[in-house]
Image 1 (cartoon, rainbow, N blue to C red):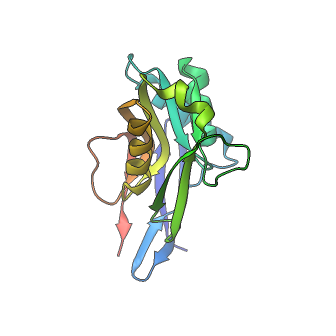
Image 2: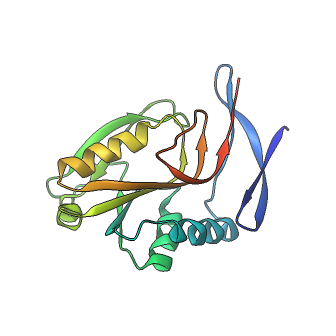
Length: 176
């Protein structure tokens, strides 16, 4: 299997290159269960957060552990944008997005209970990989709709096209 070598802080990994669509492959970065990578990435990204950030916002699942480490290191609280609407949510704010890794529509949902934690605040969006920007754009729309301001986007990697608006630790190519 073809791999792509990456370094996250002082940690090295060989990422498998996998097909995500006809003629398109990616170096698959999955931090879930990799404590060493998550801790290294979280420390590095926390050190790069702008001082004026009030709160972190992250999409559910893969970036959740990263947001936790950044929160612990920076002292900033974090909020999770869920991928399903739960029955207990009050006045949820939702957007649909198609991610390059899922290839199908997904829902991003902010629980209404978390709106006051974002309204009037400066927000840093935390993600593992920013590729097409679909998830990022949907989260930005949700944050702005409830009165927050996205002042920073941090990710372990960008992928595909360059994304100067994202503070990332590295860049992953798309294989075609």
